[in-house]
Length: 329
Length: 279
Image 1 (cartoon, rainbow over the protein chains, first blue to last red):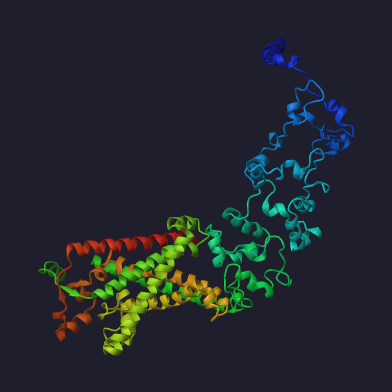
Image 2: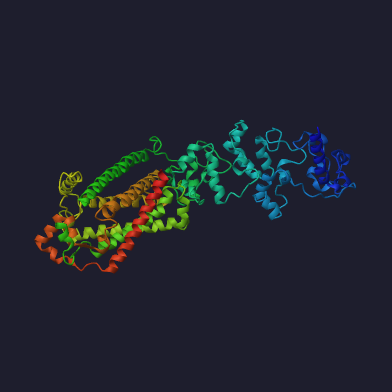
């Protein structure tokens, strides 16, 4: 008992001086109810006439519903006089969502907004909303897989139109959970320009996440090998298959359909003709049906190379052995 | 006893074995082959951990490609020159000995006999064969390089000018060309940097290297030992007396050793990289 008392006394003595004296005197930050007093009015407006209403129910149902207004609108924490200034500091989502912020700032969107001052470039809120943010797995979320394309399409209308034509959009409409949407290839926060090597090289791996065999056969070609070496100047997936309006080869509108191959190859190979496009960008030496001559070449060298090396390895070993013995004599 | 006598023999005499033209041809072939290998291997083993690094050392993929084409053209030019030279000498100047006989590169019945005798020698069941001007493994080297250069050169040109080539061959030939180019490269690199290096340079008796291809001169005693049949034939006809040359100078030997060791080291290094990539 005595011992417990000592411990308690010690604890009080240590903790008490650490409590900031100022905390008691500082004004209480405004509560959500304080904010709602004005912002809860559906017709609350700025001087300029734009709405500043925040629907309490919508906010409560959002993923941030448990937070205080001033957790995000941090410059209002010491607010004493109402109404507050017209323009607040932009909310810094990065305070909590550090990784996303780190990815966003150097991204194409981040640089456009923060570097080039392009105010139409998106911030967090442009894609995620503000007071009504829902988690990505909520089907009503702006960032739910089914809604991503429409979300990006708000600005990238032309791309969205092309994407909708493609086989991936069709698969998404059929609720195929494997089908990629914008963010699968471009990522959500670290979106980069698509004309740099790093992105092009990464893209082939991204497609390979599902199209394993096709990327494997691609890496047997000159295109694939050069890409593997880290040089993006040669054809990767999207150069032939297009990036957004990707269609299967059987579809006459596909860039790799029989009727479009000359046009597609000609993008790099000026003068490509009907003979030229008989090239197989995904060859398989073990598939006789698809590449008969390649199949024979494969068999030929599988006999020649081991045969030649085997024969001469034995020849050299025997020779070495004999010369060694003769020299020791 | 015989060994001691050889060692204490007075000033070693040298015999001319390779003329300047042949030696230049070997240096050009060797340099371009090393250059082709070094710049081609990163692409052949593009998934190896060292591929990007090696390509970067060679000036990046684009530069490596230009160097590769340059050496490819040099090797093809060397082979074309050699073929034209052999044909001209054989058919215009009437040197039929180039096509058949003891001094010809043409495989002949005696090569088969030499081969089987060499096999028996390997097992201690016979004396070393008495070789002529070219041994059977030297002929194999020669024809392997010729065959390899023609196949790889054709495949390489196809891929160098695909749009033009497609007027003659269908596009799937580019698939075959790349595959064959890579398979022949594996064969050639393995053969030259392992088998040819061993046969020509690294085996006991030659180690670390045989300088005859660089100096063009072989010692009288080595020639007699290595190519007894040739030595006796030349001695009997008296031709040998016209083939004696001054011993290679110190400078010549030094230069030959530098070129030889550079070639050997690059080749062995490339083989080690490939072995590392495959294992």
